[in-house]
Image (cartoon, rainbow, N blue to C red; front, side, top):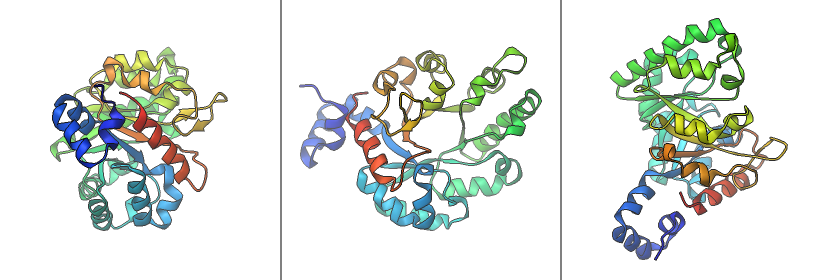
Length: 280
């Protein structure tokens, strides 16, 4: 009998429990690799009704969320944590900006812990940091953030867009400089596969290069015209990428679509169902 990830995750009641008991290795994989969502995808409806939106996300089947966008940083974090606990959701990571980590580090740590996160992800760098001088000045802070977060009991990861690959001041990409000058034991990677491919990089080669350093994937598909799409409605072979040796240690798979069309939930439902059906 061959059990797929779908069998393990969505099998009914006792059947699923029996399958997990009889196949402990597969059960461990199912527990480690949960499908999550970056809440930036649903930022508009989350900002208006955070608890209701979390409930809708949970009913789709998501069990992990990653906070980012929607004004979550100004919300009642105890309230959000209570809602997640009731809904069977957890937030392994939160997105916190560079300036907040520089100027409001203690508050950022408090917020991350209140939401139950174990990792802080730096999601974006503004134009001022994309020059050779600006990037070189920022990299030591990445190491410092990671070291200070570790002392606070949290991990640290960096989320890419395309500019890190396409920006090559002095002939070396910003991403290569990032990899060379940050501590791989402390500064982990949240790899946005869409932006890697959008930048013209070979995702399989990059994943193998980053083996052991990837904390999470951001998963959104790409149409033939390079527009963003729900997972399964584009051209990216996620199953092949997730089976690579370099993906073996990845535990979090966050659906994200910066351009998801309103009312948003059909888009993220399609992505969830597609990922749930993959064998990886």
